[in-house]
Amino acid sequence: MDVLQAFKRAVERNGLVCPGDRVLVAFSGGPDSTALVHLLLEIRRQVPIDIVLAHFNHRLRRTAGRDERFVRAQAKKWRLPLVVQRQDVRTFAHRRGLNLEEAGRELRYAFLRKAAARAGAAKIATGHTMNDQAETVLMRLLRGTGSHGLGGISPVVDKMIIRPLLGIERRELESYLRGKKADFCRDESNLNRRFLRNKVRLELIPYLQRNYDPGIIRGLSRLASLVQEEDEFLDGLAREKCARLISTEGTARLLDMSRLSSLPKALARRCVRRYLLELKGDLRDISYGDVDAILRLADGKDFHLHKNLILRREKNLLFLKEKAVPQLRYQYLWDGRGILPIGEIGARFQGESIQKANVSEFLFDDGVRCYCDAGKLHLPLLVRSRREGDRYRPLGSPGRKKLKEIFRAKGIPVQARDRHPVFVSEERIVWVPALPVAEEFKVTARTKTVFLFQKL
Image (tube, rainbow, N blue to C red; front, side, top):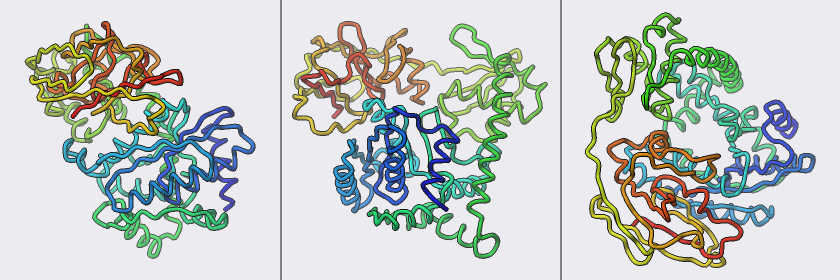
């Protein structure tokens, strides 16, 4: 296969890159992401695009520093701008009760989205290959997925995240790199068989290739593409139905269970999933059993979807029954100097002014730190608990949003929301830990002094 021509066809067919786009590339230094950068540099000769590199150091391996140094050297060689973030994924996983793979993915994509917003990038390109697609389909089969899961990895997500290499096998990319005599890193953790993906990659797929079909990778990739097309069609039908099934009463979103029961079960399941997506902000940890239990829920009964999310059916309407949580109340005036202890939540914050010229690299982490334009702050700041009606415009957002809705979309439980203090300058929200800095306080090219909020 001519890898460059296959890459160009994928870009054109899916409309992945347009002239004038700035593309942020998730660059690990491995063969897949290295090939992705080389291919983007090749098509840049015909399609005018800007390329920015982003590297996330998970700090999980002894060789992570070596990979970061390689990435920095390559960025310098290619004369491409680079953004780097280091984070302790293991500690984050422990705190959030996630496995390492889930924690790494969550932190990595959060970093990529923030880095893209700050770089003004319209697209985020990742190096997922046809092998990744086949592995994902097999993993979901083993875990008992529905038809949506068989669609595997999408070539485009949110019109922003693009995967141009999904139609190319990893062996073809490595052959392409050898032809260019290009260097890349090897991640030794990919050989660790305690991870399911590695077992599928190193054991199951080779077994299927030897004993059943040498072309199993392409076959699974073709299956994923077909399912994605059918899934998109069925999702369109579900959207149409949901427009009539879901209504608003006050702040509550209601699902008409009587009308839902008249739909074919396959379509009804999709409508329930869309309803849950609205309530929860994502479908993480939502199982087939959860959806089925909701469809069978009797009138006057509750269903505990999650320890903090209770659904209730009354008069054939389904709605979210939020637990009453005693609200924490606190308020402090802070001049931005020294340490600010907030006893009510057991947290401490520190402020620091930094000359922009001295800042060579920002380590972004909205959970524990925030960078803003010091010149736009008016001291002292009011640091308080959240209030009903709080609104602000997060970095990169097209407009102001309710803080409550942002918390819900981020999956922050109701009980935990008061433990996220609101930093306010002249009645304007600057930052809330775990959320992005406000758009109006962001660091820009005109910023002279950067102010850093940091949770200790």
